[in-house]
Every structure is written in structure tokens, then in C-alpha cells.
Image 1 (cartoon, rainbow, N blue to C red):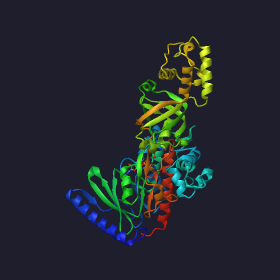
Image 2: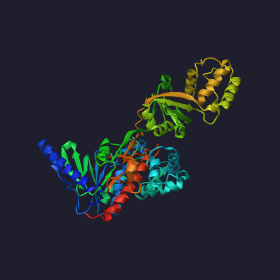
Image 3: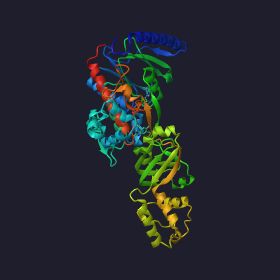
Image 4: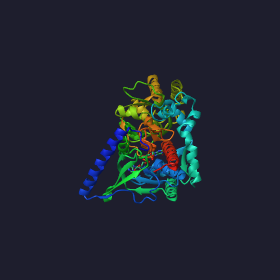
Length: 491
Ligand SMILES: Cc1cc2nc3c(=O)[nH]c(=O)nc-3n(C[C@H](O)[C@H](O)[C@H](O)COP(=O)(O)OP(=O)(O)OC[C@H]3O[C@@H](n4cnc5c(N)ncnc54)[C@H](O)[C@@H]3O)c2cc1C
């Protein structure tokens, strides 16, 4: 009963149930006139073990290459329901943000503050007591096995030149994601990884031999196949079908929910400011029913005003950290913006009062202190929010109003009424809990020879290449484990 950890009695039960289900399904398909094959005849030497990879995304393809590298005799079959590496192709505005050069530093921040995900990784590795010491422990953990430097080396060694941009994001020098896609797919072909596209893995069960029975469907031509695999890697990203497979294999799912989105704001006047970028603001997220003052709910960085609300890196980061709490609050809350974080409120008042003195005759709307680094349209918005007439001269500005402007610049509240549709960066939080996986080899704690990698797990990062790095790291570790196991595997 190789590789199965369930008691014998439950195995017999499972096998009988599987047999019954399979027989009735065959009859059902036969009745409906569907084509049915029993195994993947495409596969080469079936006297060798088979790794079936569910999902031809970053994690699935990377894992396949690694497994094949370590165990060239292993049959590796990737089943992809759509186009392979489609997210790699569209990410980073078509340039593919492969990873992040500042990864370690950022991961430390995430570990310090994040309640789930990467934090869980550290717990799983028993490093919780050490993590505040930072880099060293992290390097010893998950990301040290195959981190950003390793990813970059891998692509460089396979002919893709990469560059690190100022903010740490890594892209191919070509500025074209095709360089990454072509490299991975070319390598897969060269190494003999088989890729079947347009097919969905719709069901999985465990055979009495402890192998994986997978049902593969090609809906366009009504084809159904059954295949038995020795190793299974679930790398289905955030697709519901992938979660279903995990559940069929006894895993639980932390409720998936979007992470990384823009904020829809209730303020009609904001529309007139659409397109304005503020290079450095401090944004603080406040949610009802969530009293805890979480440090990660304050972020500093560029912000963009859109016609429906607020966007830009600072907002996307807030959305990533607050994904779960925002979901629980039905995406309702407040965001407070400090437009000039470098200058304290008292200094702002002073600057405004000096400006009033020097520009006494100027119209309020025509002039404002240049130190603020604001654009005229935005200044007009602030005056409007304060109910001030922009045609009035600066000399008429009462101290009370002057103080209010200073306060507004430091703590301008915006009512969040929903989640925007930002399609550039979209990641799902939730998935298979890390507590059900052994992170040092990415194997399931429920079934032997079952592996998970990438976004199907309850891991998500902030924008900037961290999510892809999770896919590369998880894929690499899973591929290594499978490759090593396959080298000594007896069918
Ligand atoms: C628009 C966009 C932009 C992004 N930009 C960035 C970025 O700049 N930087 C960054 O780090 N991250 C970015 N991300 C996130 C990043 O793309 C994902 O985190 C990463 O692709 C996850 O890799 P994965 O292999 O786990 O999953 P995926 O890339 O989603 O791959 C999973 C694959 O499995 C297939 N699949 C699912 N179920 C089945 C099934 N039952 N049978 C067969 N096939 C199946 C899917 O079709 C899919 O191709 C972006 C995401 C989006 C949507």
C-alpha cells in the first residue's frame, strides 16, 4: 500500500467507492456518447513513474523542469485548461515582473506584521521564536531554498537577460514577457516535459495502490480520459477547479478572496482629479469593527487618483494587507491620507501663514505654497472640501480655515465604499492552508506523493514580483522533492 497514510479499512472503502463511481461514470459517458480513453497513450515509457502536474502556470512549469532535471526518466505530463503561462504573459503590463530584488527585506517586513501566509510558513518551520531576527532565519527557511537570486540566475543561465528596476522589480531586459514564456516552454520541450492544453482535470481520487486516478476532460471535443499518476502536483493557481481537487484529496480551503485591488471612494468631486499622481503620501486604513491598530494598515508611497477612487502602489499594498478584514467589512471603511508626510502639521500652518502674508492679494485658487508639491487642480479640490471660495484673496483666509487646510493636508479622510476593478494586478488570498503542507518539500501532510505549489496555497504577497517568487520557490521545492523521490521510486 505504498505511499498512503490512511488506515487500511478506509483505503478499502475509498477504493470500492472509486470503483463504483468510475464504473457508473463510464456508463454515463457511454450513454451520452462521449469519447472515453483509459490512459494517456501519449506517454512514453510507462514502465517509468508518472508525475502529473495540474496547471501549466509559473509554479507548474517550473516544478516540471526541476523534477525532469533530477529524474530524466520520469514521465512528466502537464495538463493546462487554458493557455500555458497566461499570467506570466500578462503580468507587469506585458513585461512580466519575474521577482523582486528587494525581496528579502520586504519578506522580513511581511513576516513581522502579517497575520497569515508567510507568517504561517515560519511557524510551520518552527522558526517563530527566531523570526524577528530576520534575514538569517528567513534565508534558512522556505525562500532560502530557492530565492530571488536563484530565480534570476536560473533565467540568466537559460538565456534570459534580466534587469532590476529602481523599486526592486525584476523584468527581462527585452521588456517583453515572451522572453520568459518562450524560455520556460522551450526548456520544457527540450527536456521532454509533455504539455497538454485545453484539458481540465475535473476529478481525482486515490486508487487502492495509493496512486492518483485523475479524470481529464477536453470539453470542446467531449473527450474524457482517465489517467493514473504516481506523483501529483496541484499548481492550479486560484482556480476553483484546483480547490475542488484539493478538497477531493481531503484538504481544506481557507476561503479564497481577492487581494490587491483599488478602492472605490464615495466623493463625486474626486472624479475631476482623475489621473493625478501624488508621488509620496502616507495612507492609513481604518475599518469598522476592527479596532486593532495594525502597523501594516499604514503605508507610504505613490498614490494615483482615478475616476472611481484611489489606486497606486500605496493603495494596492493596503488592499493586500487588509484583504481579509476588508472582505469581512464588505469593502467599507475609511482611508486617511497624509499628503505631505515629511512636514508636520505645525510647520504646515506656519508655511500657510507665511504664504498668506506674502501673497495677500493673490486669489486663493491661484497660488499655494510650492513646498507642498501639489498640482493646482488638487489644491482647488482641497479649498472646495473646506467650503472656501477660490476667488477670495489669501488675506481673507481666517486662521480657523488656515488650520483646517493644514489638517486636511495631514489627515484627509475618504470613505471607501467598495473594491475597484483593477485588472493589472490581481492575486487571490486563501487556498490550501500551509499547515496541511510540509514546506520543506511541499508535500501534503495528508497523502504521500501529493504536492502543492504556487497560488493554490494560502499565500499571497504585496505587488512587485513577490507572488511570482512564491510560485518559483514552491515549484522548485516541489520539483526537487518529486525528482529525488522518482529517482528511487519503484512502480
Ligand atoms: C493580471 C495579473 C497581473 C499580475 N502581475 C503580477 C506581477 O507583476 N508580479 C507578481 O509577482 N505577480 C503578479 N500576478 C500574480 C501572479 O500571476 C500569480 O501569483 C502567479 O501566476 C501564480 O502562479 P501559479 O502557477 O500558482 O498559478 P497560475 O499562474 O494561475 O497558473 C495556474 C494554471 O492552472 C490552470 N488550471 C487551473 N485549474 C486547472 C485544472 N483543473 N485543470 C487544468 N488546468 C488548470 C490555469 O488555467 C492556470 O494556467 C499577476 C496576476 C494577474 C492576474
